[in-house]
Structures are given as structure tokens and as C-alpha cells.
Amino acid sequence: MAAPEPAWVGLSDEALLDLRFCDLDLRMDQPRLERGISRLYEELERQGLRFRPRCWLAEEWFSPDGVPGIAVPFYLAHPRLARLERRMNHVVEGGTHPWFMRILRHEAGHAIDTAFGLRRRKAWRQVFGRASQPYPTRYVARPGSRRFVLHLGLWYAQSHPTEDFAETFAVWLPARSRWRSQYADWPALRKLEYVDRTMADLKGIKPRNSSRRFVEPLSENRKTLRAHYRRRQSGESPLESHRYDRRLLRVFAPAGRNSQTLSASRFLTDLRPRLSRELSRQVGMHPYLINQVMDESVSRARILRLRLRHDPARSARDAQRMVEHIVLDTLNRNREHYAL
Image (cartoon, rainbow, N blue to C red; front, side, top):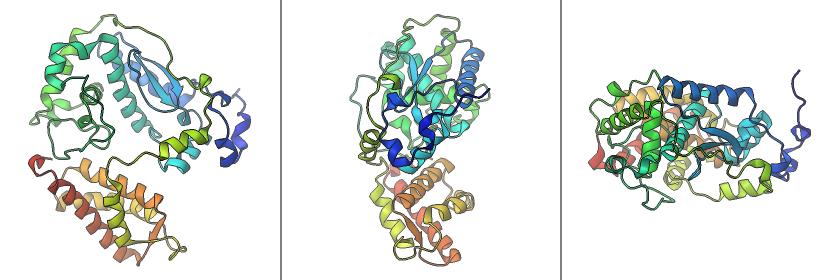
């Protein structure tokens, strides 16, 4: 028999926000979580690795220093919390199975680094840099650089050497990964080959660090969901949102003026497949870059509550020019890395 739904499922968003994390009584044995974690373990086993990172629920995604495990965000443990997350942050990070697996593989890269102390190896430092360098609160991405793999959004591999390794590991791990052909003429291939050699050396070896400690588990977290979201919403977008806002406001209108028209976020979402195809052909740039621009455009349009200013046909033409200008502006600010 299915477990009964928790009492808080029927609460309004406002009432739910006043609950503490420890009051949610969430569990990891949810089908969607178990499916993804089981798949991760199968991929590690297929590569001959004995390492199996332990997973638990916490406020957000992370793999803690010193503990070879993975914290999974609370909102993935129940659809009601996922709906609240979407309302509060406009996106559910890891909310689909492919997205969940991408993040899980990335965090597994951090965890295996911790389990075997890889960052302390001289060869690791020669390939990725020093893990001890300060971790930036913001970073300036070079969208055209071929020295880094493309996996999670926002060119995350460029933010820090440890993230570079985790992203490279995540690209390498899946059995059907075509990393050799996809990165054949990229300097990033050297990093993938290093990961391939290193993981071959670790086959069948027991991890040096096997700590099973949970870090910041929900059961011990007395913070309210409201406090959590206030902290999250105080952060700034790493993609310099003001650059998007100015262009969006030229194409779309604030909700007050056209409250009955279609929302700009929905319009851009529906238009996205066509825009992506046309811009890939016309501008000749990598789909990854176009996807990042589209993601941020939809997110900012939703946050600003924008709606259509003109008829759909004109709005589609204006939106295509807007996205093309943002893509080209991004690349012009990174001319030395025009390879992408």
C-alpha cells in the first residue's frame, strides 16, 4: 500500500513556508530518487569502480568537503514541494530525470575526488589547477572556450578547478558517452583522457575516505522554508541579469499594461524550439550557448512578469532579434574564445 500523504500537503504556500525542514519528515525512498541513484550506481559499476556515494536530503545540491557523499535538495522528494520551488525560484533544478542525472553525475565527481583524495595528486593539479585557489562568488565565463567541457549550464566548469574536474567526470561517466568524438579537436580532450586513465587505475580499489556522515541533513535543520527562500532570492544571477532585462523590456511589456495578453515566458518557451533551430543555422553558434541565453531569457521574463506588447508574429520576430543580439554580445565580449 502507498504511504499516506503528509499532513502539510494540503497547506497553502504561505502556511507551508512557515514549516521547518525538520517538520517535513521527508525520506529518500521515493521512486524518482531511487531510480536516479540506482542508475548512477550502475554507471559506476560498469566503469569498474567500487565507489558508491551515499545520498541524503538537504536544503540544496552539494557534496561536502571531507565527506564522499551527495546531498539532494528537499523539493525533489515530493511533488508539492517541487511546485513550491517552482513558484519561489521559477525553476526546479533537477526536476526532470535527465537533468537529475546530469547534476547527480556532477556531484559524484566531487564525491569521488573526496573519496580518493584526487585533488592532492600532482597530475590532477597539472591538468585542472589548484583546488586550494579561492572559490569565487561570481565568475566571468568565456562562452567560446574549448578548454572546458559543456555539461551543466552557465559554463560551470570554468568557475573553479574542482568544478572543472566534476564536470569532466560527469561527461566521461555514462556508458554511451561519445566524449572522444565530441571533444576530438578540443583542448578539453586532455582532461577527459586524464579522467579516463585515472578511473582505470581506480578500478576495484576501495576508497581511502569512506565516511558515511550526513552533513546538514533535513532532520536536524530547524530553519523555516521561508528563511531558506529569502536567502536564495537574495543572490544575484551569474549571467548579469540586467543585460537581459533591458532587451526584454524593449520587446515585451510589464503585466500592468497588457494583463490579458500571453505571458512572455510562455511565449518564449513555446517559441524556443524554432528559435534554437534558426539561430543555430543563421548565427552558426553552438546550441549550448543559445540554450543558456534562452534559459535566462525565459527566467527573467517570468520574474519581471512580462507579457506580449505586440501581436504574436511581430513578437516572434522581435524575440529572435533579441536572442541573436544577446548571443553575439556575449561572444563579442569574449573574442579570444570564438571557437564555440
